[in-house]
Amino acid sequence: MYKLNPNIAKRIFANIADDERLIDEILNDKSEELLDGKSERIVSIYLFLDDIRNKLNKLKGKIMSYDDANYILNIMILVNSEITQYYMDKAQKDGRFSYENEYSQSSIIINYIKVIRDDMQRREKIQEIYPNKEIIESKELKIVSECDLSIIEKHLEYLVLINTLMCMQISPFFNDKDRIIAEWFLCCFGDIFTNCMIEGIYMEPNTSYSEYENGSRTTTKMEIFFSQSNEDRYQLRLDFPHDDKECIHFNLYEPFKIAAYPIDYLEYNMLIKQYGDVVKNLFYHCGNRMWFKSQFKDYIDLNFTNNIEARKALLNLFETHTHSPVCDNSVSENDMKNFLNELFSAISIMDMSHSRYLKPKNIDENKELEYITLEKNVRNAAYKIDEAYLYNLQTGTIPAKLKEDLANIEIKLTNVLTEYYAKYTHEELNDLSLLELLMLVRECMIEHS
Image (cartoon, rainbow, N blue to C red; front, top):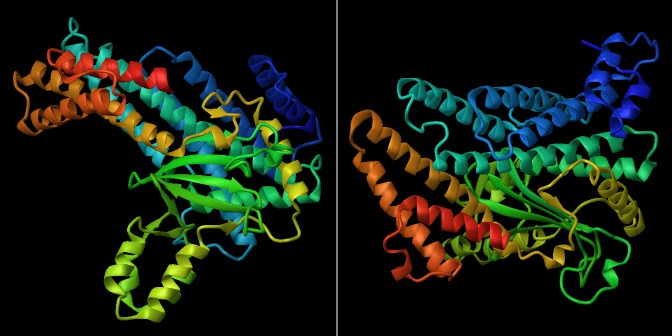
């Protein structure tokens, strides 16, 4: 394994290095001045992420092959291993390490890429059996591959954000407050985004003056949209003080509803001890925290009518967690503004095409969360249509369950076009095939994205 000297590391982070020449220089480097282990980990992750990004860029407009998916998978596993090790080392240092906790930030995306790889291996074998048929170049599979590339790219950009925070935490070029804030963000993201896929990041382009603007959500500086392993979708929002909230805090939002920041295991177990096993129906487990169920308040209304004290305490718990402090009082608003400007400047050169430097107040979070679901539904619809074609090709028939799925897909696609986008009437769509309906939905998504 090579070792990196500081001069090479600086060139890498400055984006002024030619890949092939740099690799030769790394392998032939005889310098005795070496990076420490933490710095080398960050540079290694950066190189791995850059490699994946270059691979994804080359796949634009193409279908990801078995070899492509396997290549991306192997590098993603290396990245995940390095970041996981960071979180495990941090937990051990802080005395919080537990074998029950999860420290991986990419387990879902890794499993997702494995499914893509194995599916393409199957399809490539079918293509060999039917060389004159469109198996790995079908229109449906192209839609699937476009969606897959987008999903991988968005999570990749989150890993770039994590690696940048890791760099800021140890770099001598940032001040003590920057390093402290970077560590807080890393701890928060490590807890919240375990077992999640990141769907989009929005950042305030100028944190210094936006709070003087009029209107709602001008205090919001960053938004991260994500989906959990159970397919629940959320928006995590970083807000500066406003109204009666005097601290810099995180808000959570789910479709058309304010959510509460999840609690840790200790607080959860204390609630069970105090109010009994009924508490287990109020939360679900994801990552390293217990999350408030979407029907939390409704369940309390139904089950705590005779226990006014417990009802009041649990509702107050929810309200308290709708605003979760990011840091303690040692960090001022100016400290946070300076940090965010440094962070956003650092990642702005990283080719994060799915992360936008927009004022969060201009983002409609409900439409964004709906789009996340729509994109995945389109991907799954295209896959099902293609699966039906493969079944019919190999067996001369389509299973009843798959036929039922296709009928439901037709209804959903029609509803998207006639009700959600309200661009077509049912009469205009009556004679269209499933693929034609799907292509129209894709056009609408691109037009409204």
